[in-house]
Length: 83
Image (tube, rainbow, N blue to C red; front, side, top):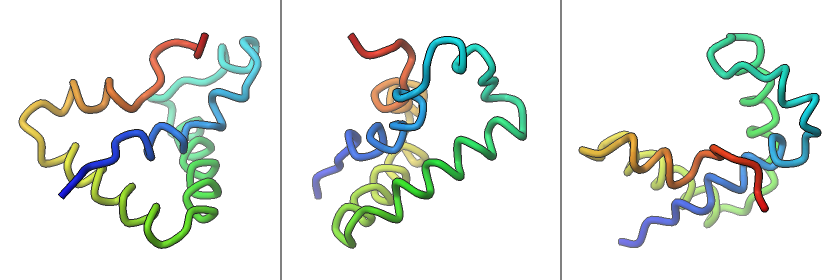
């Protein structure tokens, strides 16, 4: 079984499309900010087809069951603006 971690990073399009000034107001530990991000990610997820949805869910399952969760999240979560 192949795991496609890159599918999750595409769901962060909402963050990648924001201006720096807007990103300054995003605090992932704040419940309302997290809710907005998850709502935007849900919109992205719903645009995927069934195979892509399955790949995202398998990738999330892999990350959560991994013995190195921090490495896996760093592989898919944006930590710096794309260059």
